[in-house]
Amino acid sequence: MTLSRRTSQAAAALVVLGAFIGAPAHAQDKPKVALVMKSLANEFFATMENGAKAHQKASAGKYTLVANGIKNETDTAAQIKMVEQMVAQKVNALVIAPADSKALVPAIKAAIDKGILVVNIDNRFDADALKEKGIQVPFVGPDNRAGAKLVGDHLAKSLKAGDKVGIIEGVSTTFNAQQRTQGYQDAMKAAGANVVGVQSGQWEIDKGNTVAAGMMREHPDLKALLAGNDSMALGAVAAVKAAGKTGQVQVVGYDNIGAIKPMLADGRVLATADQFAARQAVFGIETALKALAEKKTQAQMPAEIKTDVVLVTKDSK
Image 1 (cartoon, one colour):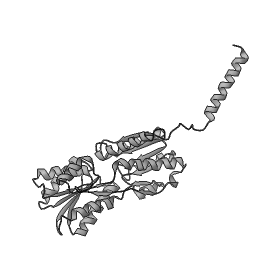
Image 2 (cartoon, one colour):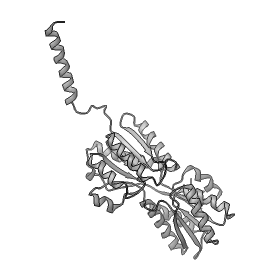
Image 3 (cartoon, helix red, strand yellow):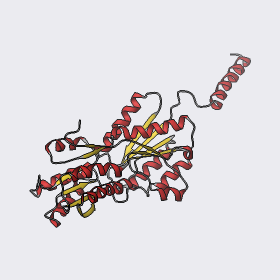
Image 4 (tube, rainbow, N blue to C red):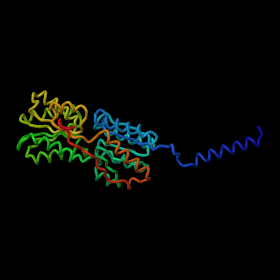
């Protein structure tokens, strides 16, 4: 090969390389979206993950999805590490159901500072904590207080004034747990029922069972247990059975997971609320993708996008 031919080939290679380096992102470059959830041991979040994966598959070519969740509902440290890992992987957007409404805010601030768009689903970040960090994060999700009141109002039809009831709350530092408790309190106050205790079952079956059993021991004439999610309701149902009070102590939940449906059918659970787990993550992902496509900054995103929550009973279609 002659020197002149080698020189021309090298020059051509440099032109191609220069075009590649200097070129904007190619059309086939897809945004990477991270979905970080709470415990995947909870059927609600497993359903959420499956819904997100199905959406990504149906939208093949539009974006890539990295989905993960913690093992324990209260392991905020593990979830913070997941967020940091997503930042290190340089995702374009982060859709998160935070395990704690305040503890995750600094990690989210760090992600936003790196240019990552953040969308909040399921459990709302604490407004004051966000304000303190000078950030706005859109919340895409239902009104948990209104949803819990729907369930509580349905339960109230089988109660009379003065009846004693107990509330099994989720993780008490989470906004959605607080809102569901408030919704239950609203309904019980309207019905004239007596809320004799509010205790955390940490969103988990076993802890919900322990709390339910303790409440029934302390108040033998308890008429109902209002659980902040269906996992804790499952634990409450088992506690009611163990106490020999099936049919005497009503149980309600929240989330409409698959495991609760046979209990709705046979009356062991009176009602729950459906906030459409499979679509929750999808709503968040679509919000993030729209903002990316429109080249919006974090501050330009909407503050809130409301999604549906409905009452579910044995008579629901």
